[in-house]
Every structure is written in structure tokens, then in C-alpha cells.
Picture 1 (cartoon, rainbow, N blue to C red):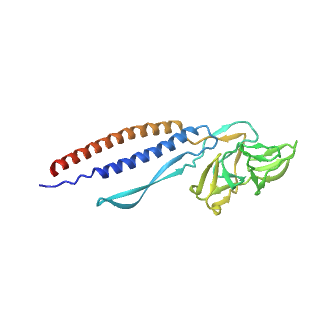
Picture 2 (picture 1 turned 180 degrees about the vertical axis):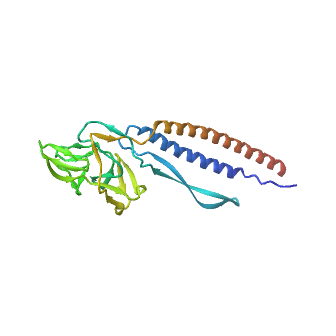
Picture 3 (picture 1 turned 45 degrees about the vertical axis):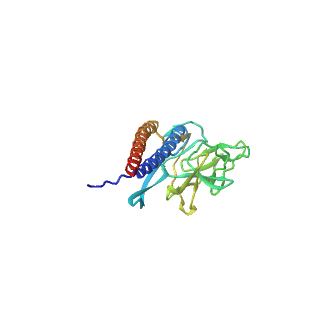
Length: 246
């Protein structure tokens, strides 16, 4: 008689890993949906990579590493007619100064604070030539397409617009800001293109995310059935083992 080895424990482990992955997919998808209207929001997704082989009860298995990555595809332009709203056309990020250091953003919804500085919605100074942009009270402000800043017709500087050679080195920190792991990956955009009176919209797509939710639900239901079947099989094997032992 041929003896067939059945390992329900391995099946339960794989089903548990699948359930954990679905939870991560759900968290990413719901966060993307919550930011459909967030200016310049960059959606996240999960990436998979097979990294090693491991043994479980003598059986070889492929281990998959799952990481969360950001999709930096540009969002649509949204017209606002606000002269302090700016959208970068093509690659690049604005540089801003925070208490924690330099941060990067594509959210060009800027305002002027009580110190006449150009700042983000959360009050962080926007940089030009490495320094905060400071206006004069009553002066006529103009931002050119190349980021040049003029007061009453006189150019006083140019907004810092930089590209990041490896965008996956950018870490989301909230408030539409990114931290760069290695500052050496930053370099200036030679000919930046800035559209004033516009903002960049979110690159998350409602239909795509809703379809992802439906797929997650279907896979969750299937995985639950698999776990139930494995549990029932495990119970039968234990019962048969008890009878054999008796």
C-alpha cells in the first residue's frame, strides 16, 4: 500500500499567510479610496518578491516578501484660478522646510502666512535657493512657468524644484510630505514647468480601487472556505489516528 503524507498544518500556515496579505491589501486600498480628493496624493500598492526557500516539516516552500510601494504617476490637473496654487508639470518636487528638516511635496496649494512667507497649508515654508520665500506687504507677486518669483516685476528668486533619482527612497510622512532617505539622490530640475492657478489631483482611481475591494472580498471568502476545509480534514485525521492508536 502507498502511504500518502497529508500535512494540514502546512495548508493552515499558507491560508493564514494569505489572510494576512488580504488584510494588508485592504488597508492599502481603503487608504487610497480615502485620498481620492487629496491634492497630489500618490497611491500605494503591494509588491511581491520571492526571496528564499525555507523548510516546514521537511517540505520546501518559497517565501514571498511583500513590500508597500508608492506609485508616483502624475495626477490630473485641477483648475483653481488661485495664483498661489501651483502644479508641477512632469517630474519634480517642491522643497519645504520643516522642524524635522527638508521635506518634499507635489502639493502646490500654497498660502502666505502672517510673516509674508510662502508656506504649505500646514505652515511649512516653501524654499527658493535654499531659503524661505518672503514677500513684501502690498507687492504684486507673480510666479512664472519656470518657478521664477517676481515682486512688482523684479525677479527675487526661483522656487526649488528637484527630481529624485530613486523615488522609492521617498518615505511618506503625512501632510503630503515625503522624507528622502538619502539626500544625495536629489538633483535640481533644469527646466521646471509650473502651472499657476492649478493643482495636481490624486492619482488614485475610484473604479480601480473599488474593483480591488471586490477582489479582496472574493479572495477572503475563498480563503475562509479553504481554512474551514483544512480544519475539518485535520479533525478527521486526528479522529482516525485515535482509532488506529486504540
